[in-house]
Length: 177
Image (cartoon, rainbow, N blue to C red; front, side):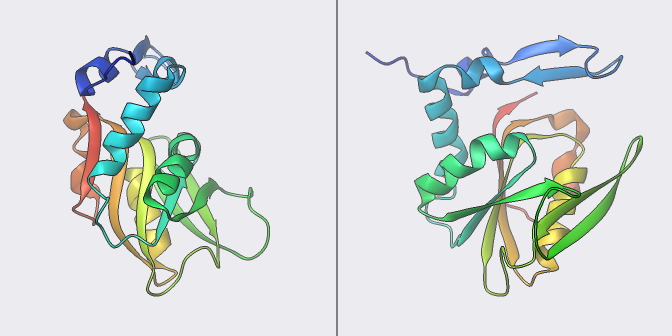
């Protein structure tokens, strides 16, 4: 019989790695969860369930772990998938959005024809922390004329209040810290 996973049992599979990538940071390593097929399936189902009846036309995953989760979520919703990449990784005509980080700036890009007017986008990432990356992804999608109708993440770091930085109000998170 396949083991059943709820949010607490999924959380127990996430390993805390202190002082990575720098001193004072606790990195939430999802690799142990990803290695267990039943846990991964439960996580994807939980990330998708709130959006099963939403008017989503496209799923977009943010580099890099949004790439791991996004295509399966898109498949479950029977929608297409496009990546949101770091600068310089996509061919052809692109649109970009530069945003501030604690330690500098970063830039996200999508192919210019990935989405457009009338498209309803679900953003996917592994972690919602300060909201900077997801907020930049929202702005990036908006430049194409598409609309972000939701965001889904595996982990939300509630104490950082990243959800408050987002324009979209339908945000789903499976695991909370």
